Image (cartoon, rainbow, N blue to C red; front, side, top):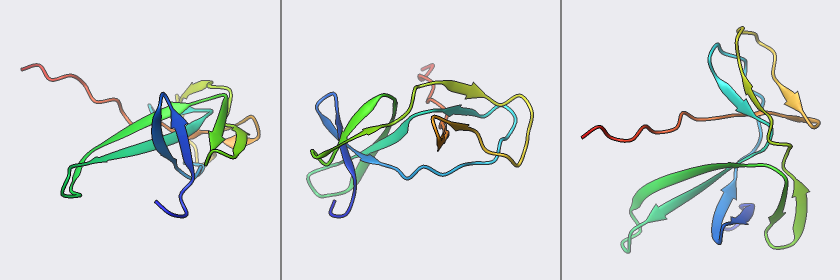
Length: 104
């Protein structure tokens, strides 16, 4: 994990993903905050799962820096546009769809 920016949330380490403005597509959701990911691997080093979390407020990165991730405002796109959403002076993060529970 060298060179990565790490945030600890709820006692777990997450990689902080770079914020990029995404074009506005109808029905997409954005959040003013940071997107964090955490990969789980088995004892052989094989990928098992990836957990994505969206956070707002202050984050402590790499145990050194405190940064403001955003206010947590969520946006739902109702009209497509090539523009991007900015909030708190930063581009809003495109939220990935939440997995639905199995109906089995």
